[in-house]
Image (cartoon, rainbow, N blue to C red):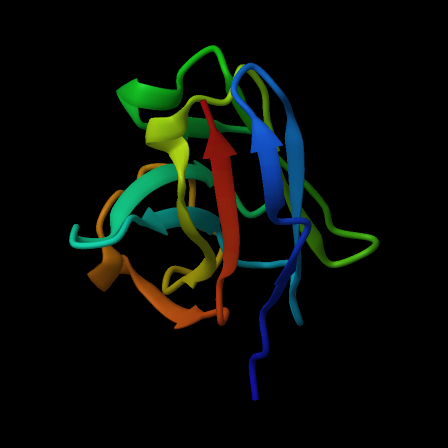
Length: 124
């Protein structure tokens, strides 16, 4: 049974930083972060390959967010800097379906397991 547990969300002022963590149960699949703002569809944020060697990002977060993983700890991170009110959303981590996959997974259907989400609120 795969379980993903996010943590690290909270309330931050615009321009601030947060680091999200996702405790996973394995280290041989790509991992992604998605977010869903109120009234909007869930959207891709970032993906990291199974071994951390490659990453990909949504255009809206390039240069501000960094995804990484520590397979020894079975943990995936999302470091978020220069946060803006439009970054306010529930953030979800997800495990990809492809064993030893890379970082080119941008749609929800390419992920098999999801965490419960953690709220990030950025005040202006």
